[in-house]
Image 1 (tube, rainbow, N blue to C red):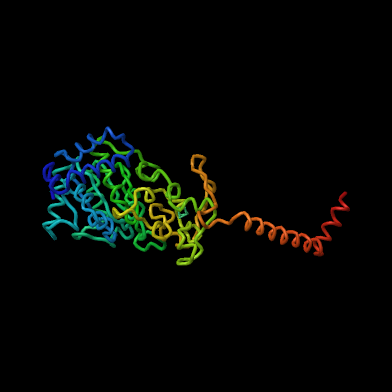
Image 2: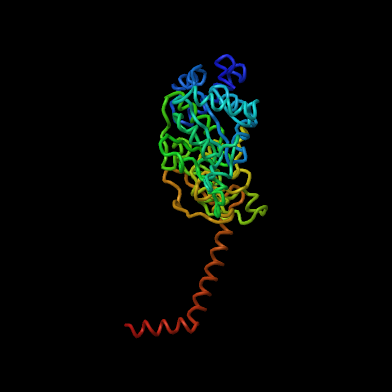
Length: 372
Ligand code: SF4
């Protein structure tokens, strides 16, 4: 699984697909178009760092989604531009042979390799709840982290502990940052994360030989700097107060905002609404499922699907185009609006008259008379 170099990379993916993937990754990072050549040169350089990829408490969904993307470009790019020395799911070797390969790679590349971690780490009872090759995940992480230049946590489990860490958390599962304190750690959360976020982070490192700017949770700001809600295609419905009320009903079929069904988009930092998944331009919200906040440590598996999150920006930003409540061919005409207004006025008037006749209203009137 070593680096295949420029020619092999071009054989694995067409030049067109390669350029397209690099342009997309560069745009995600926020680089100007003129820097795409630099990114492509970094991707095809033969001196890229070795990578050791460890799996702990996880479902392997992050690796699976990365490798089984409907379009092979991303997985080919990632696997070809790094020298993947150890990955339990992919490597042909097993047992003592695999363990020897891990040991050799750590020893030979001390201070040079990138450590990728997938899965949470159980800490209860000295970590006995997850062992690989007779060694606890805790011991393996300590051993591999020592010689790493940086640690990349792929997925929510490695980043924050994920579903394993939810109360009562019998195995004492935590994320890497709760254990390793003396190494640069980049979190790429998501369940699973977008393969493009992983690709762009690796490309950033290869191009600039340093880590991208991170937020307080250790996530690259270029991918997790804005809320899903800010660029969601259902946002005009949110701003106009049109909400899906139930799965499968008319309001849901019309594509209305999913907030009332528990969408966590207003509190979730990620680029899913922009980058999408599976190379066919879809993501959960676009196919009718609320965002579950899988990049947020305090939301995923801690709030139920239907639980609503706090709205902090109830109105659209000034820079947004104005939203019209009237839909083409569906909006009420002037006559209907007038009749509805008349009816509403009549109901309101009747309500006021009824209120005046209520005993409480009489008492209030009497009280204000005395106050004068
Ligand atoms: Fe989109 Fe969810 Fe925000 Fe509605 S609440 S606009 S569905 S992200």
